[in-house]
Image (cartoon, rainbow, N blue to C red):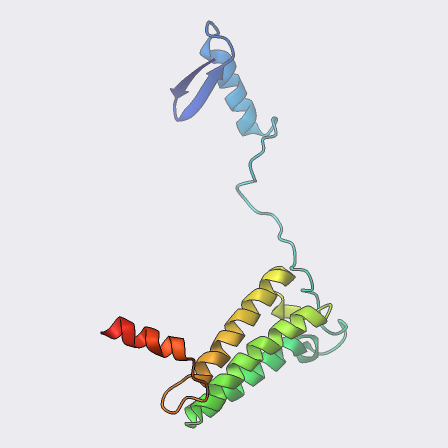
Amino acid sequence: MSSRRRNGTRTVSAEPGAGAESGIVAGVAARSGKRKGRRFPSITRDTARPEGGGRAAPGDAPAPARQWPMLAVLSTTGLGLLLTALDVFRIGIMLIGVALIMAGVMRWALPSVGMLAVRSRFTDLVTYGILGIAIVLLALMAQPEPWLVIPFLDDTLHFTIK
């Protein structure tokens, strides 16, 4: 089997003695769409909605009611940001983390969560859960006067600074 390049296309001939014409014809047929390949199309025509990405309320309900899970998470996050701005930073940041954990729980428990469904259910659960738990733990360990002290992290910090 031999292969040649001509005008940016690759021509392949099945037999060593075969001319480049059969490879060119195959290349033209592939470009014209007559021959199906295993490649994905270069232009995406449609995308699938994530599992559970439908409306959270019936279609005749007003727009805010259809997206109540997302509004609940956003309003809890907004309240956390407001508390953080009002210098109650630890409670505000914990509220932001709780909002993410709440998003993960809603994604797991509800069959349809509207715009809260971004990816697959498993990926959303893992993402919301890990980020929410990390934010809550960081808020609990924030200085000064942390509410949660993890000794090996303190030793790690002192070891890296020395």
